[in-house]
Image 1 (cartoon, protein in one colour):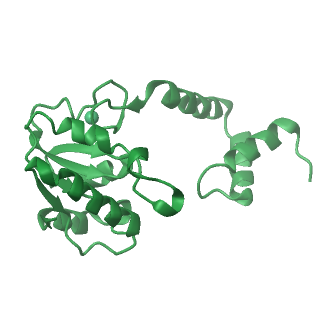
Image 2: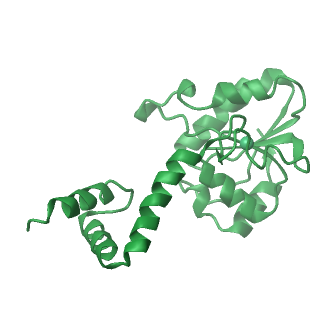
Length: 198
Ligand SMILES: [Zn+2]
């Protein structure tokens, strides 16, 4: 079936979203067509605004609408401990547990030779740079419990070893092969408090 060109364009853009197949894209597009005009405009403005106004924190690479994010600039956070995660969504998951009061570092990926992602492709050198002034005494590695996450944790352990910083890995108990963001708060909280030396 042929759609009017603007509708076809919307469907093909929606199809590019993760987890959205042709049928869902069509359903969403029809929904947008039927929704009040203001709602549709608000959606398009929200998309434009998030791209224009939200970037990455210059220090921890979490999402932020300021050069330095709210967590990094909060004096109540423990400056001596950094939790290293793969993605910004993992920060959200760990914050929800209420068990961690230090700072974060978002690698924006994990080492994965299969996908040609080496240590240079993620924010590792930026992390090492943050460790230079001696404030940080512990690194908690909270990469995902899968092959890429473990490879990244081991690389990080080797990288940090000469620096006399304690490096810990969140405890097992998280579903192996899974993503941190899918762990429930209690499990993730336990994994954090039960972290062990790497
Ligand atoms: Zn930050």
